[in-house]
Image (cartoon, rainbow, N blue to C red; front, side, top):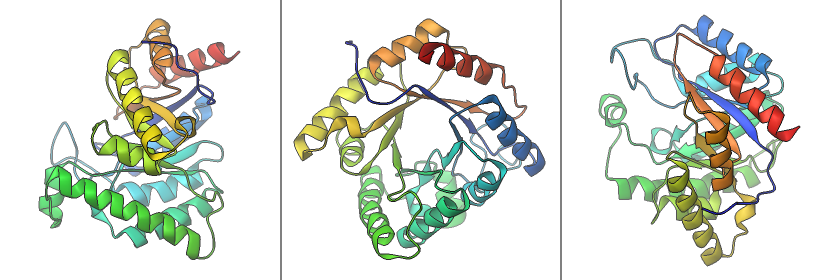
Length: 264
């Protein structure tokens, strides 16, 4: 694993998972995260809890993003990640543009092919196959980018940054190379470094500058500075912690402190 040089500063984020909570508690967590100095605040796009009581409280991700836009003033916001086939692509483009305006240009469109079968079956969406969902994602991204070009008003941040989540080497990373400004995945530093190598190869194949894509990673809650530095060496620059209520921001505070010291 060799040192990867990128044009991006070290940034930290938090994914506040909208399950097993109340809106009032979630809103308080959003405010707390911004007060601590994170660079990005995310929710997710599911209709039911992913763990714990499967019948517990859960809130819809894009409606929450509109609220998050008004609860914050500085941090970027986004869905980590939107499940593409839950919404018509042209509609999603308009939703994203609207929240871009509400937030004064702080939205990141996080998007992926989708995977949680319960969402599909209970809400009446066709689950399909991984291949069909990835094909739909590619088609949707073409539509979304086109609508941002022709609809009015234009996005404030034009184009809105697109984050694609996933590590599939044959299709997901190719789609990332083609469309994304950011990429998010999980794995240990060696795995993460390998995925970046594959992504860079796709960029070379399609003629894209790989440095146009910021690398975000799911971050272990108890990661120490040496572990975080190993992810930086692997090529990560945007570190995102996932959290579920009861909210405990100790790990977030440590991550912000590490960011500040590393950039100081």
